[in-house]
Image (cartoon, rainbow, N blue to C red; front, side, top):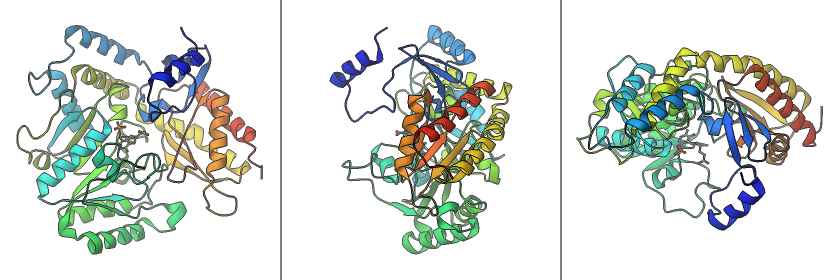
Amino acid sequence: MPSSAELHRRRSAAVARGVSSMIPSYVGSAGGGTMTDVDGREWIDFAAGIAVTNVGNAAPRVVAAVRDQVERFTHTCFMIAPYEQYVAVCEELAALTPGGFEKRSALFNSGAEAVENAVKIARHATGRQAIVVFDHAYHGRTNLTMALTAKVMPYKQGFGPFAGEIYRVPMSYPLRDGRSGAEAAAYAINQIEKHVGASNVAAVLIEPIQGEGGFVVPAPGFLPALAEWSKRTGAVFVADEIQTGFCRTGAWFASEHEGVEPDLITTAKGIAGGLPLAAVTGRAEIMDAVHPGGLGGTYGGNPIACAAALASIETMRERDLAAAARHIEAVARPRLEALAAKHPQIGEVRGRGAMLALELVVPGGIEPDAITTGNVARAAHGSGLLLLTCGTYGNVIRLLPPLVITDDELDRGLTLLDQAFADSGAPLV
Ligand code: PLZ
């Protein structure tokens, strides 16, 4: 096997610079909660490929299902010759997503594609155009989803012009806005009504816990108030659960923590254990407003990805991975709180389940500290911990381990994180 150094040389001459990688090591193999690079070094995985391998890397049931499916048939295109696996995934989505109402789903390849389609469906069903999104939001990198995404660098810089009829309003961000959920919702709703007009809003689109934007958990009451306003004014309430979905936050979907039943939910990432699959699921009357042929794509709901999804869902159910996510929080949160007690740069420990974060600030206030954040991440990478950062201000360290991570691996990862803070030169209290 070529070394990482050799692969890096080849990469520089063949792969576009715009596609970058967090670490310079190349993957040899990965399983469960660890990864081994081509140079034989083992890593603890606190990234899960950005919240994708919730069932673990190369999960045995997913591997078996993919192997079986690939031998039977690889692709026919559901729009040409349909197959059971697609239907079965849509049945699972109807059963697992919040809301006891009649639902329909459509399958796609990526999160961004699911979000684009949710927007198409909401516009078609309402006959309206405006889409309301939030500060710090992340919804993808395609043209429409870049417009929906808040952060310019690196996602949008130089890539305009962007799609129209997108309106951004303030997000509830307890550390930074000091507002209760009800106050933050009233503020956002007032902006929508004054700047967009209630009767123009096709959809209110929100991540129940923001992902790339900083693992921002809105204050309690914020999401229900927006869902209620949407219902009252005829807007489609869309929860982007692409990062929060499939047991990540200790429930099948993060909307459940606040009893919210979104009209539409977008999913991807954790749905298929690493194979590309995404979905829009929601109220039958909204989904079915679109004419036959109005939704689709060559690969959407590819049979191999669907087989992987069915195996992933079975694994999540059988191993109760929502409970596993709660267990991860129960183990990790006290360790993170202890870390915060030692390092005054840690302004807040937050998150839910296995979606946990540390926001780093200049001690004594809330000024973002991206420098220490970068130093901690680099130190973690140097010691074999796959750790991601996020946040509009680049000052949030996030933990996204596979939900099957063992207690021993979790403990080793948290110890490496502790060490990374020590090595980063972050001063102690
Ligand atoms: N919506 C909430 O988290 C993807 C993107 C990383 P795709 N997040 C990771 C990067 O830098 O590209 C994401 C998300 C939410 C939509 C998406 C988009 O999903 O499958 O990457 O298109």
